[in-house]
Image (cartoon, rainbow, N blue to C red; front, side, top):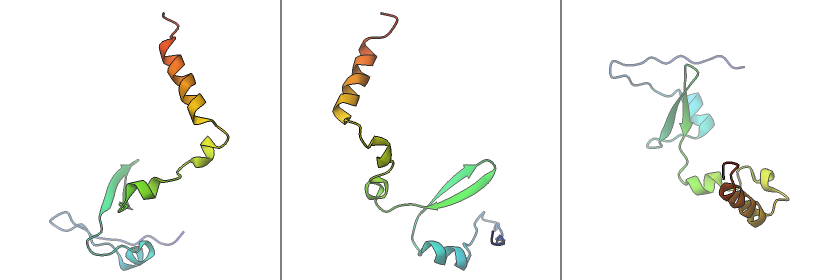
Length: 85
């Protein structure tokens, strides 16, 4: 694991991204980053320009061999026939 790079929080609560991180992720001036707090850590994630394109095909392996129409019909049937009826 590479050694962590230190940054300092300014009196305006800003940080500068180290050039090595910017280069690795091809972050340019004006790009937007998502800030996420996970288990006491701040995670910066480059925001995709196009969410649809970015998410297209995500988890497609989960749906391989599944007929979507049949699956939806079974789910809808389950909603209308609950054990409390």
